[in-house]
Length: 306
Image 1: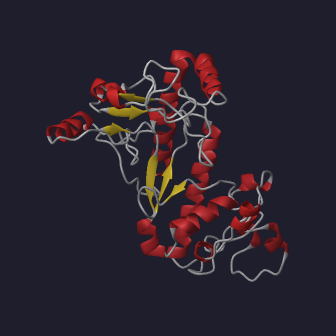
Image 2 (image 1 turned 180 degrees about the vertical axis):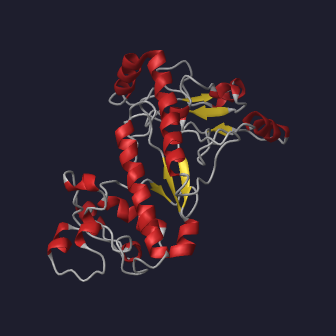
Image 3 (image 1 turned 90 degrees about the horizontal axis):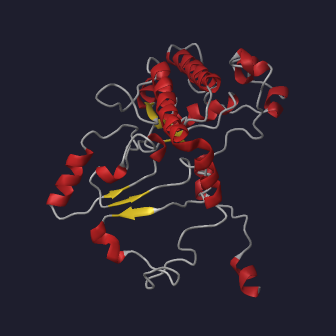
């Protein structure tokens, strides 16, 4: 199980959950994907799990996107130690699973330097800020979008999930439309439709400033105003800034046939007038792309000939 959960809350009954699993003959694997909400604050070994891994990506300065590189230690309780892999250079020789038993020497120094520079208090402060930033966004946006999950105290952990499904029902605007419209504001959309379809999962981490958090929240609030305009008929339900987002520079200077203005398309907030990101392409047909895969890598035949 993931802790805090992918729903963005601290599961208060985690020890009871682990106990139930053990009482029924099971083992519990604690997923350390969200350690950036726990460093200095929680002790995964006390949750009651049998195995726990600790991701270095995201929490300890290793890149998260693009597939990693994913690396980090895996801790087990003593009854599972005999099943751990060994290595020729370790006390246990059998069962090697990789050539480098302690991980990649090209990656680990980055984490080591980060820990050394941050120190214990700095690492704890990073966790506190990750939680604070997520709750700041949750509080600013809860009047505009339902926050799907919160803890018993009404707070979230390190991320919050905005439920856009009611908006789809009332306006026809989908989570895809909101994600594409965010590009016009200069944002790459947060995680979309995971872990719940039709939602946005927002994780600001500790690294974003108050100014950047406000810029994102202002964009989401403005988008909600545009959705409301679709709901009340001020904007056309099919030909509106959300359905047509993102808007490219080439589109703006070309023939304009939409019922909304060019200014509304590319400058929905005044701050974009002086600091505008121009997307290189407009709306992509996601379904067509999924059904018609174009592989940029060489063909299998080329590998065979090599």
